[in-house]
Image (tube, rainbow, N blue to C red):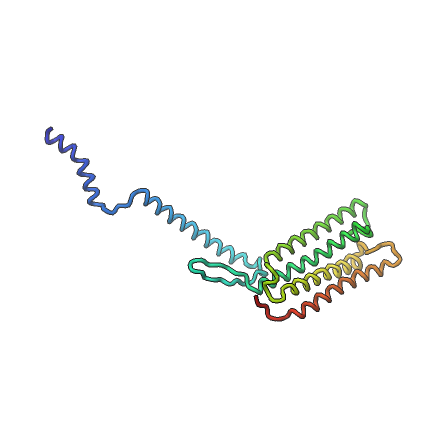
Length: 233
């Protein structure tokens, strides 16, 4: 074999040997790709987290009821716990809505369907009366659903001091408010219906309905006065 042919055969091996000597610590292509992917993932997560903080700051006014949160550092993990004041607010709002919706549902079931004394709007056709009752039941159902969700967000009432009493008093206050608002606006101001229209004692039925709302409100307020103390888990 000539020297020229030997030289041509040795050239590739020599180049490979030089490449190994010049770059002894060069990372394999697969490792470089994995590192680049990890950096891209971290940058993406950082971008998402910064957007979340921005949206939370801008939209915080939409959720004033949630109040402040306690942040706890558990090693590298950060967990958010609902404060006692926030739980109280959620229980108050949720129980009020549940009481308001429950008395509305009872009004629709008893007076509209079982006794059939009146509909929401009386001065209309029978079809119009049914439609008005349907819209009323829809509003009551939405109120109950929202109240249930808010109570669920608040957690167990027993987690705070006198939580059951707090729930009970605002449930009664909400129910009483429904009867008072219904009695004043629909029965006396708008006069779209009465409790028992056409009865000689229709005014007495209206006043009794209004008195029942005031009674529930007063009972709830009395219970509320006994719960005005500092709450602790």
